[in-house]
Every structure is written in C-alpha cells, then in structure tokens.
Image (cartoon, rainbow, N blue to C red; front, side, top):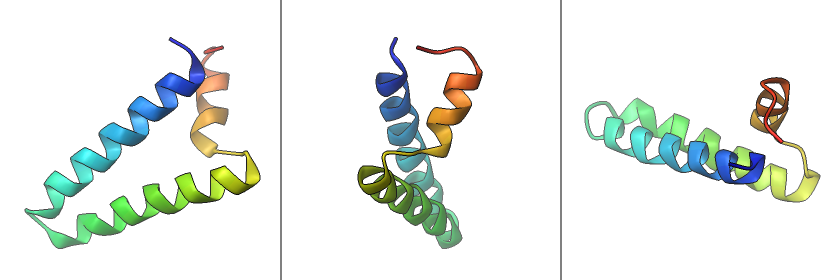
Length: 60
C-alpha cells in the first residue's frame, strides 16, 4: 500500500471513529475538527504530520 492510500485510510478511520465517539461524548467532535483542519492545511502546504510519521516507519 502506498503512503497516500495509507494516509487516506487513517484519516477516514479517525473521522469515522471520532464521529462515533462523539455520540458518547460531544468533546470528541473537537478531534474530528482537528483531523479536518489538518487535511485542509495539507491541501495548501503539501505537508502532513502523519505523512512524516509514515515515512519514518518506512512506507513508500
């Protein structure tokens, strides 16, 4: 799996999990907002912290 596909899978899983957890405790919606904002900023800056982590783990 490529780093881009892995990144999309992780972001999608984080959003789904945080929305589900938001039904238990609404404070989890802040995590959903954080993931969304990070995706938005990465579209403009072409830099994402998770990509740096995945590269450090050896994904190509």
